[in-house]
Length: 126
Ligand code: FES
Image (tube, rainbow, N blue to C red; front, side, top):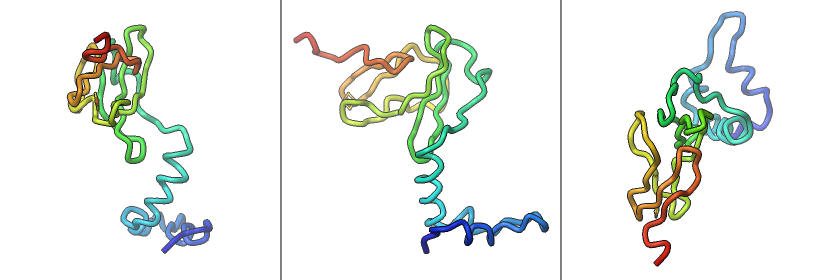
């Protein structure tokens, strides 16, 4: 069932009673619309800066279904990076959280800085 208007959604929330229909949490069509209309189009809250206080601190999270790395770079700036190698899309971080100097793709060894810049490709000069 596709929801093309706000009408069906309004009927799922009873503000007076303070109840929400469970389909909001489980309906695949609603979920796909959330991905399309919210997570793919709007700013997403990622974290409070105190969660990654030191350079290299990081944790994995999601924006919609995209795995992302929230980290603090060497300049102290917060960064949110797609957890995907630009070579062939392999994840560049597998730990849930920690502290790192860089992110290494284990597929072919490309390395990314804390700001997301590509900083190493094995055999590049050769
Ligand atoms: S997929 Fe990451 S180095 Fe090849």
